[in-house]
Length: 478
Image (cartoon, rainbow, N blue to C red; front, side, top):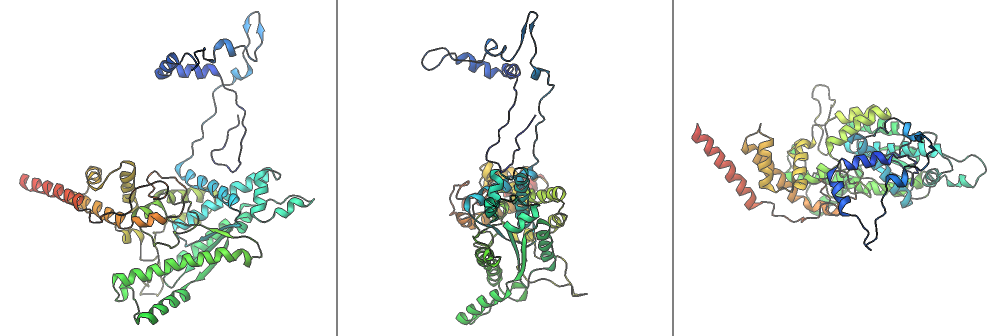
């Protein structure tokens, strides 16, 4: 009655099961294709008879013969089979990458992970996955302190000296104890960051048990801009303060890229700060939809050693956060999942009445010009259905029947413009856990060109002609 878990950190599981071959034979007989294959495969390659499992071969094994016939085997008296445990997608999004991270961590020789924790859904999902890894590993280590998982846990946590002592072997007493040793999180705020996201990051770090820091990187940003000013005599400004779009993007990107530099600095030195040996693997937190749209700064926190959510959609990540909040009791995850996604790279709009602030006014979907739900449609049609601009437009004009053809055309053309102009970012994307069929990862799962004609001259012209013909037909009918 034992079952092997679908997601586990043990290298090998041995399960003994009793199978009724009569049930297997009956099931196969009910499928015509099996009968045809059996009839055609009646001999070995050398011409001899094929050895098959038959009633005469196995029906007497393990059974007692009496004058009245064969007594039933005890297993024959078992009613029904094992109930199949099907994990929910949100469970798979958490437990699968958790086991993947543990396998990578123990094989790499690293002392743990470093994660830039912004308090948003993506980085919080990564922290949650590492927390789930600690739950699984702690449970396995406690179950068998002398087992391989416990030994690997002691080695990774730098407690392997206990193996040479005569006393009790060390195993983490709680997942939080293990998380404090292997997960290092840091909120890298600027003057554009809100107190709300800082608070969420701090509370999530405490709930999971990570070694958490909260820092400000404004001095580094100011220093970089000072170098630029000395070289050019110019001071870039945000668009809300009179600057151009180019200035605004440059000011956003420098904040994002400096976070990557700080992340690798902390990953290398935090073990030393804590009096431990080794290095930390940097975890990225860019989801599959942002990779598809190219809504990320090249060489920002999307650039890392590993990315457990690089092939998981934003909507699935939010479902995972709600599931983890209920499963692990981290209530802050519900709050994080319900907050509007924001990069917090532009100045905060203050509340004029009391000088306070609520949520940041810069939202991801507004910046992208499309929703995460729409990106899911684009991704599946582009990769799974192998659609180009015209075929995608034809399909979505039916699926999105609540929109006019002109609106659908504008959406499709906007997506393909940004997809093609940002495709180069996928050439340097961080290795990710492969979960979504429409992953745009150029190195492993989506081996197609990265240099496109961003105007899509012929395809967009065909879309425009279809829209114009439809509109003329509507005008004539009216």
